[in-house]
Image (cartoon, rainbow, N blue to C red; front, top):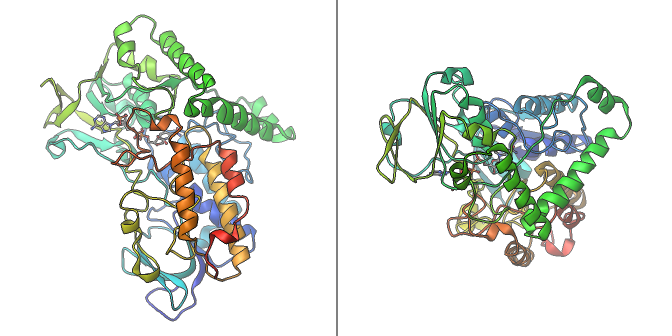
Length: 492
Ligand code: NAP
């Protein structure tokens, strides 16, 4: 470790982030025989979003057998859709299996990274001022790690308990809501998971909805002992399950909604039927919950218990815009105030501000944040001109709305590994022309997707441009990242 000194040997690779991305990179380095790498994380455990999000009901709406590394398929999943604890446990297993412990530098928040051209290395500084150096920098900090609060006045004035879904106060398990009035702002994928958990406990639950969402059923179920035995023993079963979910559900069905095809409109009708089935006798509530934009524009929500929770007598869906948080509750545009003892923000993340807290300075003093002022962009979501030997994982244009992001991360890690092998210790820097061409292609393809339709979403910058998502089926990304094209990079 090169703490506080300019003269020690640099690590070969420094990875920032110990979530799915960073761990995938670390494992592949290890599998490739590279021993000299470090993984930094500001948290005191690995897991990224699966460490941070501990709200009741937290889980993944991608099926268990798909939401895992292809090289570490797992028989132990207890449900069709994994809960947060199981995913975190899975990642811990991976850390143990590949003996990553000695490489982890937890509780270490990297605040800056500077390219030192003469030495050909990255100099990293953490929040305590310690320095580290590495030949290659891989940033795997995720897109959904910095909570966003609504920009309404009065948040500090609230006198009850208040917290964001991604910073859930452990003093508030579902039972603690018994007999209390609760306000929830936001109706995205996080709220859809925690609201049903607390709805039956709260005395009154006010759900403040700015936009309705399209929701399809999850059909979640527990795997019995026979199923788990079969996953362990029957050759090819896990792979078949994974392949079915990836191809039929993800690439065919869900992608059709994003592409706005006829099949996608069928998914929208399916969603409407789901709502009618679960809320058969309240047309007013159904009207509130019917989106005014086509399916796919926002992330499609997948839930069996969201509508039944909202249809409860003690739950009110409030569609008047929130204008203020007061000392005792939430005020809406019609002037009405609803009192609550607990206020929960399910208001998402600052997702378009990629790598925002880290000051990254590349060749010639170029600052990543200056470059990205109008929105982040990276070649294949991974490489940025003027930032040699730096790669991003789960960067711009690599989020999906229809399939497992772990598949995208694996594609990226495979690509980076191929570059590292080909570069043989030399510098890797993508050319401006290659990024310009990639950006133009992405804009053209994104313009055809449902995301560009008339809705707000965290995929869009303040200027309304979608920068987070990959616009094609995910296997097309795997093809695009199959082999690094030498002509897209500057000669070393
Ligand atoms: P989100 O999708 O960004 O949703 C935030 C919610 O807060 C939206 O309903 C938004 O309304 C609302 N909101 C924001 N500001 C508001 C305001 N001032 N007044 C009223 N409402 C306001 O955030 P999220 O639910 O945390 O999910 C973020 C992402 O995390 C997801 O898209 C997904 O990628 C990931 N996630 C995944 C899973 C999974 O199962 N895989 C689970 C949870 C989260 P508008 O819709 O009008 O903007």
